[in-house]
Image 1: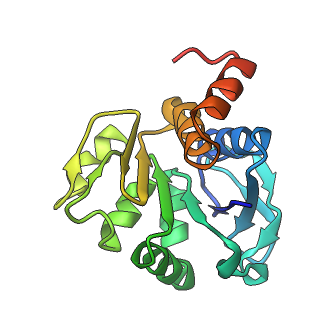
Image 2: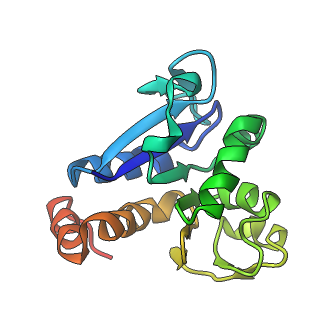
Length: 183
């Protein structure tokens, strides 16, 4: 079974994280929210408290097929402070495992050298930070094992793209219709 780890740090963008988690779980993709802190309660960028499934120390990375990083400028800065997470992101990329980021989070992938020479997108105001990257102004960009998305308004598109990756186009369409999403 496919397993996705979603990393949450204080200041994360709630909709970007939770809409993707919700969609993946509707498609029966094993999705675990992981707090990059000492507690499972994480405060989003808009003051919404979310309870993660686990804290970072409880995670076995060998079980995961994909790392997903939601955006939120403060949340991404806090994710970047977790050196062990950054090391694992680089390791996943080197192994060809899926690395996914939305909004401001692609800037962290850039800082880790993962987007060099790749096609990618991010929050438009941050596009100039993606040097050595072919920025594409699109809702979702897939380049090999890296998937990026622009932000809050594209989070459903991202969730559906991840469902298509794991479960195929028919399942993505089924979920899209079930949630009444019109692209």
